[in-house]
View 1: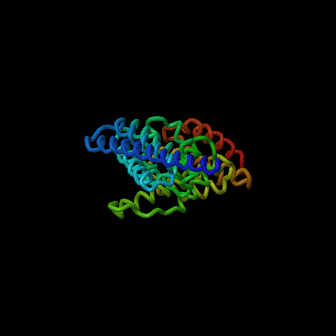
View 2: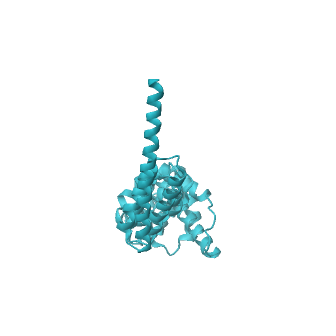
View 3: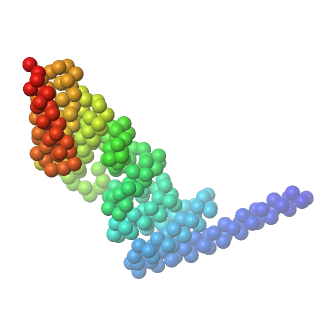
Length: 287
């Protein structure tokens, strides 16, 4: 008898809690709708949207709570896209904290990471690393992750993510011009091949680096930042390959690329000049 009474009380408490949660989530959603209808700013949207998501998390099996949570997620996403970079980071961060697997994160990471790069660039890498556990095939995340890994000196990870980005072909979004989409995809592939080549060069994979960067050179003409780095590693790789097989012609090719890099202002300019002079002196001693 006592067990039945306890069970009945437990059911009654659960029903009561669900009713209270329903009241709370409806009130929070009403506040969210009012803020949206009044075209309020990021802060006014974030508060009630997060409240809706918090209440919905307490009743995961409730269909209406799930529906309102989806609306709240969209509110955070849509408001973020129309906000300043700082507010966008704040709103997308709130969405990510509430539901790291939200469908709106999947389509919004490109914008989110661009804003984060402007507001707090040091946080891009950790955010990408965490997000990839939920969206391992998201091209925006793969591209950002490859760039971040290269910057952090993680050559192997940079190569892995860049290679996967090249092999990933997302569907063209509705409303996007086909020619513009193809151009964007081609540019991404070029950048990823560049990352792979640079990472190979910094990992002493000289043959692979030489092949990858020579293949991408035609596509990066005019981009001095990418060219300066590519020429630097081509100079380094051809020098090392020339030394390994005692090939003066390849040493001189290393000198040529080093001189090209030295002619481009950037972080590799001084070292490239030094390398070119050293290679020239060493080649002069060879027959």
